[in-house]
Length: 69
Image (cartoon, rainbow, N blue to C red; front, side, top):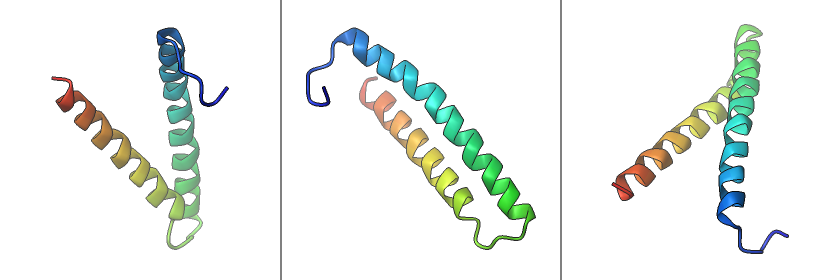
């Protein structure tokens, strides 16, 4: 199951499933980061995780687009 070769349709489906998962994590971590910030939690670890994830996502997206253009 985990190591079989994916068909093109399965790859498309996996990409489509990754987008809502990314949005969910963005909203969950963002909401928690705001809550922790207003409660005075130092350092806001979820904010650091959120920003690191966004940085990795956009950097990877830029590299993939640059490689395929």
